[in-house]
Structures are given as C-alpha cells and as structure tokens.
Length: 179
Image 1 (cartoon, rainbow, N blue to C red):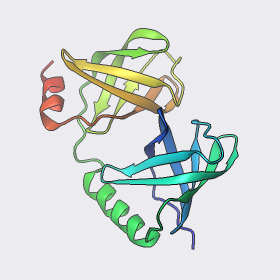
Image 2: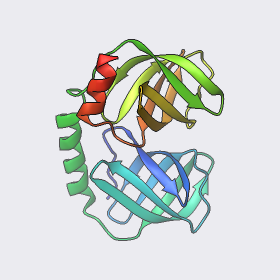
Image 3: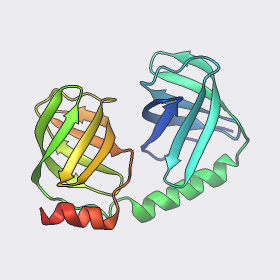
C-alpha cells in the first residue's frame, strides 16, 4: 500500500553529500524521493522526515530528479504518516516570527545581504536578488554569533525558503528578535 505525505521537504544525505528530498510516496518497505542529490544505484541514503524520525535505505532506481529507496528496515508507514501529520499540525505555524530585518547569507555566490522575512526553529523565508536556486547550500548569519547552515528548498520571484540543517533554539530566535 502506498501513502502520500502531507507536505514538506526533509534533510537528506548520501554519504557526505547533504541536500533536500521531498518524499513523494512511502510504503512499509520503500519510498520515492524528489531530490537534486543525484545518488548512485546501491548508495545508502538517509532522509530526516521530521526532527524525530530518519529513514535509511538503499537506492534501487534513479531518474533525473527522483530516486527510489528500499528501506533498511520495514516500517509501519500508516502509523508514521499519522504521527507526522500530528507533529506538523502541532508545530507548523505557531513558532514563527516575522522580523523583516537585513541578514547576511553566505553561499557559492559569496556574501549577500538579504531581507529576513520570517524565521522558525527549522527554517526561514528570505527576500533576495533572484540568483538563489533550490538546492543551494547557504549559511545565514541571523545575529552576531548566531549562524545556521541551510539548504534552499524553493525560490521564486526573489523570495526563497531555507530549510535549516541545524535547528534554532528559542534563545537563538530571541537573539535574532533583539537585533
């Protein structure tokens, strides 16, 4: 039986290569991912589907932008989807803060000043000059001494979503707020 996730991208890694992956379908013994990681057949891939759940599997097929995994251990996909739905409903919007302030972003394009539109424990929305593309690795300097690495999960019309690869705690969000 195949189940489809509610939404959201998860952090993924193939060896030392970090990236984002969107779970397109999930079953008890496998999953289909949309990702720019370009994993190889037989490679082990780990996907963090939430802060509390990571799934690991072997890449069994690859096509441009997608791959299929056979999970290392069978799961109860229906129970997992129920738990993820409940977690997202509980945590999704209530912990966001809308600062509208300038922050520094370090990327393959160099240093840029962008406008931080909103921030949460797991991500941020930024306004940029239009050169950022999904899959880019970035580092946000949110306040002096508060830097977080992330990956652009989407970008359109000069606005981008950054999935943080290291969560912000409440104190760090507070430091961002005060600056």
